[in-house]
Length: 183
Image 1 (cartoon, rainbow, N blue to C red):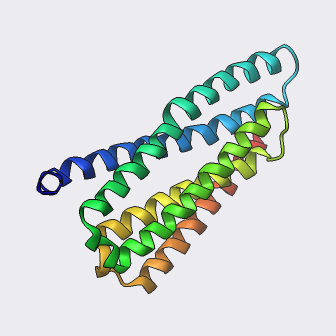
Image 2 (tube, rainbow, N blue to C red):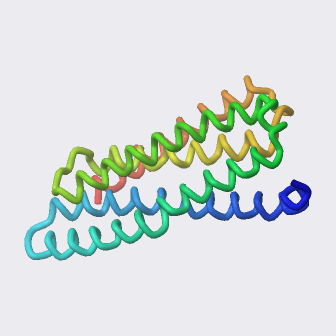
Image 3 (cartoon, rainbow, N blue to C red):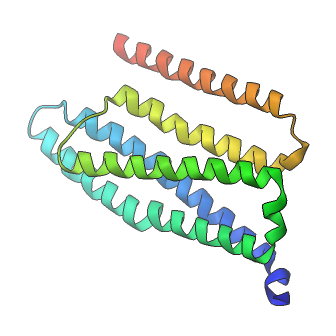
């Protein structure tokens, strides 16, 4: 066990590296969903060419980057909890794990969107997908703040800040959509 404790920094580093890769995969995947939905509205042959290319990109991103990064993030996180079980006595860790659970839900809903798009089923508009993409941003922000600030956070102000950020992102998306409609 001493070896593990001495190398906890390596485990934490790998956890962070794969977390960054996981989020990068999620962010880009939803952008590809948006491009696919918009390509589905184009005329042939552009529609087929674009959809085929986006399907290749999505498959590679999902199965080579996003999902393996999720597994490795969770594995190194679990390894940290095994090395230092005292983390589980901390309130912030329970809060973080709750948001990680929401991130897993986000991941698997995104996987469902991927499967539907692969089947040619467009259930989401590009606008809805833009909003969906910001859910991952919000989860990233809150998880990072929880981990960095730990129990030193005034959770009332943190909650207000989180809701404010969500509203700001929603406003930015709506403004972007209005500008695009004018073009």
